[in-house]
Each structure stands twice: as structure tokens, then as C-alpha cells.
Image (cartoon, rainbow, N blue to C red):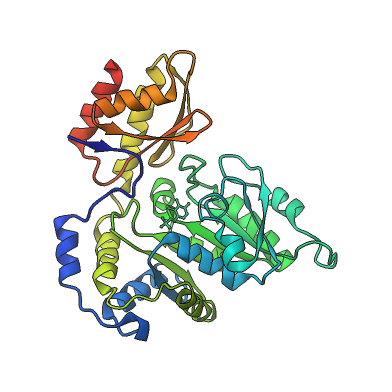
Length: 340
Ligand SMILES: *Cc1c(COP(=O)(O)O)cnc(C)c1O
């Protein structure tokens, strides 16, 4: 039995999801004529109470499109130094939009409204890049699946309004935050100009992300997606997986969260584990006491037992629970952890 805990993106479609995909009515989505893509977009827009939505092949492309539509070349966006848009999108912010990032040192990937205010360049000081966008991430990936306090997000929204800044949410794992904090998509839709959500992580789809926003912003986004090469034809087969996942695999995220907390509790008892970061959702970040055992050795030992996890650099390791991590695997992994 292989137990893959490197990411929640390793899941494969369930037989029921595959059946839904095979049964999907499709058309050419580049002509906006794919009924399944149109249905998915309408469904997600409706969930967030936004005017429109657009289906994307990846979360990266959805974020990059949002950044492009909110900025002009030379502008600057504000984000936490842990942000995915800054660290893990291949430098796309500068490549695609000619924009720089003003990095804020927050707590577990989350910054305060005061820090955002400090990071804004005065708009009349033409020597500095013009600040035009604030990017938030919820849950935070590098921050260990941490969830924002909604009040903090509201405070930052007030700052954005006061300074005329656009407000984008990288919600690749927003579903996990909604389930963990008992929040609704509508709350988020009311706060942000644009939100990207992944269907290919906790929700278990093979592919896909959705960007939501105003009709005017999504009209711009459609053009940018085309430029980035993201126009797909009979994409309804994939979009149908998204519809199925939203209807059937959303609430179960709480099981991933429960398993993650149980793994964390066992890690806490191991002498060679120096620190386990607080676990709010499905990501566990922890540090090994390198004097007792090296991270490489720990990863190798797990691998001998058919368990796969990855390092994040700087002595930090990560475990991510997901749909394909079954109860049987969980029991076996917990027992194994206690013995190695
Ligand atoms: C996974 C992820 C994305 C998008 O990644 P893709 O692999 O391009 O779908 C964006 N933001 C965060 C925080 C993520 O974890």
C-alpha cells in the first residue's frame, strides 16, 4: 500500500466522478458553447454571489490572469512573503504583468491591515511603483494551511477601498477554510474583487480552477486567458468533474482536517520532532531535531515504509491529507510513525 502525502493534488477521480465526466454534454468552450463549462461557471459565480466566473486549466493561470487584469506594467502588488503568487508561480507576476511584489512579513502567511497601509507607495510620489493590488491567500499554503480571521480580511478591504486598490484572493484552498471556519462563499464574494478557487486539490478533480468577479472583470479575464493559451475546447468533460466535486466532495474536507490533527498529535509525541505548527486544515508543517535525525533520513525511513512526504527547505517538512488518503492508510501510518 503506497501512502502519498506530498500534496492534496495527488488524488485521482473516483468512479462516480469519472461517470459524471463521461456523461457530460460538451461543446467548444472557446466559442463559449460548452454547456458543462457554462454550468460550472454559473454555479461557482452563484455560490460566491458574483456576476460571472471563468474556468481555467490551473490555479496559477487564474491568479496570473487576476493580477494582469487589476494592474498595469510597472505597478506593484502587496502580498505576504509566503504568497504562492510570489514564490511558486515561476515569476509570472513580472513575466506576465510587468508587476513587482512588495513583500510583507506576516504571521503564517497572513498580514495585518496596518502592514498593508505601510506597504502602500504614495500615489503622487512618481519615483516609486504605483501600488494597485493587494493579494491574499486563504488557506495559506507555505503558512501551513492557516485560516484567516475574517475580521482581518475586512480591515484590509477597508484599506483597499480607502486607497483605491483592487483586492484579490488566491483561494486555491478556500474550500478548506470555509469548512474549518464555518464560513460561506458569499461572505468572501462580498469582500473581494476577484477570487480564484482550485478544484484539483481537496475537491479531488483531475484539473481545473475557477476565477470569479464582476462581468466586466471576467470579460477582461477571457481575453487574458486566451493570450496565456488557456482557451480549451471540449473542456466540459473536466468541468463536469468540478460540478460533481462541489456537489459531493466539499463537506468531506472536514475528514482530511481531522486526520491531519491526529497525525499532528502523534508527531508531537516523537522525541526527534522539534516543533509541529498549529494544524487548522489539511496541511501539517513540522521540524525535525536535526541532532537526533536528519530530515533526509526521516523522509527515507518513511519511504522504506511506502509513505511519501516532502521537505520544504530550512529543516521543515510537510504532510498533506486528502481524499485518497483512506482510513486504512491513516491507521497504518499512525502505527508506523510510533514505531520508526
Ligand atoms: C496550488 C496552489 C495554487 C495553484 O496551483 P496550480 O498548480 O497552478 O493549480 C495557487 N495558490 C495556492 C496557494 C496553491 O496552493
